[in-house]
Image 1 (spheres, helix red, strand yellow):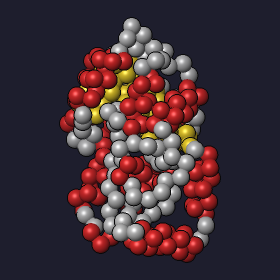
Image 2 (cartoon, rainbow, N blue to C red):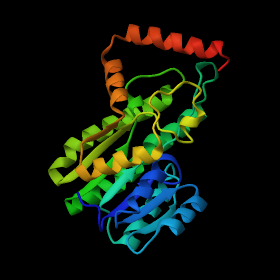
Image 3 (cartoon, rainbow, N blue to C red):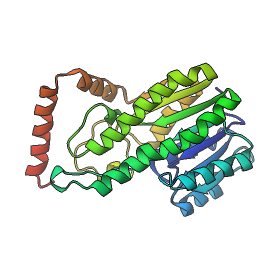
Image 4 (tube, rainbow, N blue to C red):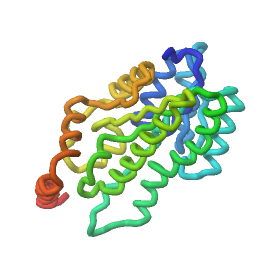
Length: 260
């Protein structure tokens, strides 16, 4: 797929993977609506990267607020005239220990990682069906494989989103609509900076963005990286639960011994 001339919606664009993807797209001669809560960061980006070849439209949007999602969707259509690709990237995470379980934190994670995407899908799906074309790119995670200690809510939100995307890929194929699932491993972002454990094969957001944009151009069903982490998480998905839980407990005990 040639991205030149395409109108693209991108959520979670103010930092991390989203910011890096926006940077890559700004060089593709396309129109990009960048959405996030940090309006100042979005405006700075638009001022720096808008050019004669690419137009960047900054829009304040808290994806967990349905009215803001609806407003952002309508603004993009008014400004661009159409949407060709929607990259649903917004995400958040908390490390939630069982001894201090927080329903509020859990609800926030689910509202951004899952419900916010539902709000966009509710607008995008009928719109793309009416056009009989379009592409939905959902950013999930390789962490959707298992319920890792202290990350269960995050894992659950990503697992649910992956399954929804899988279902939509089947249902929407008959309408000429592509659905892509992006499953990154560890990428250095403000979100992963909060993790207290060792993260193997950590990747820069710029490298991750390059892989994602290349995968979109190739219209891949799944964009998964890095390779060794993909293999490792796939193995975790098929080993007996008792083995996974044994090593996960040992990992958790090691963190506690370090006072983490």
